[in-house]
Length: 134
Image 1 (cartoon, rainbow, N blue to C red):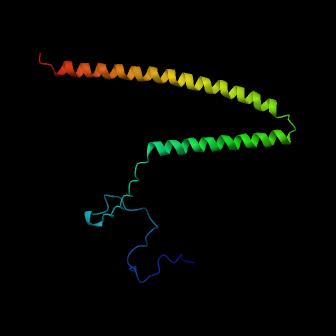
Image 2 (image 1 turned 30 degrees about the vertical axis):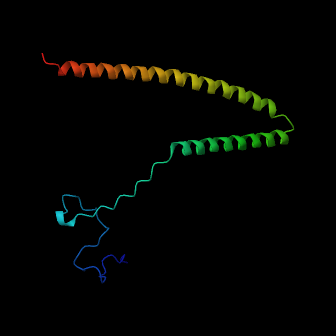
């Protein structure tokens, strides 16, 4: 049985090979006149207001925290209080990890910014030295 790809259709010449059965023609096979048009670029979205975006981010974090708190209260109620010590231990561990994340991040961020500033100053000094006449 044939797949029907070789049957003539009103929009295809029977002498022309069926499309889609072989590899796509390469750019070397196409002439300049057969170039496909490029689709239009989508419109660039407008920049969001930083203050409004920050408020939306804080609101999302606040709502997520409230949801977690309500879930923990429900689980503590359902477990008849057996879950409270586990939650307290997890909270202390989380605060310890968060403290180190913030402190190390702040400290390393300052070190990296300072090194970048020194490298930029050294690069500018070298450029000025190269531009001076001998």
